[in-house]
Image 1: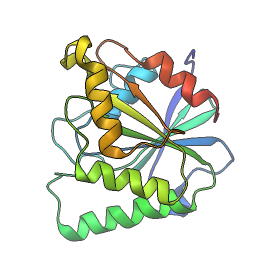
Image 2 (image 1 turned 60 degrees about the vertical axis):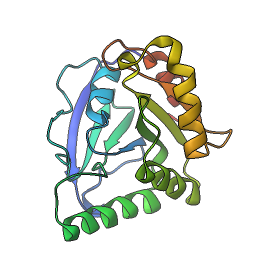
Image 3 (image 1 turned 90 degrees about the vertical axis):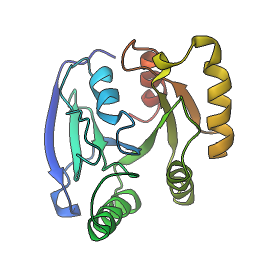
Length: 193
């Protein structure tokens, strides 16, 4: 996909702040520091558009990125080891759940996992949550450049089995460094745009 226009529209915490209109939305879910921002940047060919951070838990709002005036990527706060209070984590949980369960424009979730390791308990819980609400899900297994190509399928198999991935949902092996999986990801998203 040729990206001509990208805009960070709003950082929202409640439904009345979500962008108006009927453009399709794709939510990026994953644990803190798994590479959601790097995924966005690689997909849109921009180096530092979505801010990456070495400090987990940086994203604390729903960040809406409008792409080509055609659809949105919505970066949601990462789960896992962010150093935030229990109250803050609960508030994030409520904000994320509200978005996922009430947003009509949400076409699919992109669950970002680290190909190098089996999905975490939190990844499994997130996938089960998405399936409970019948949200189409595309699993993006990042950091493929960090393991030998010959081991990719073995790692992908572990990820699929750990998540108990249903046949309708696809897993794409991805690297923000090399661009591996970028075309496949765009191809998979096309059916919902």
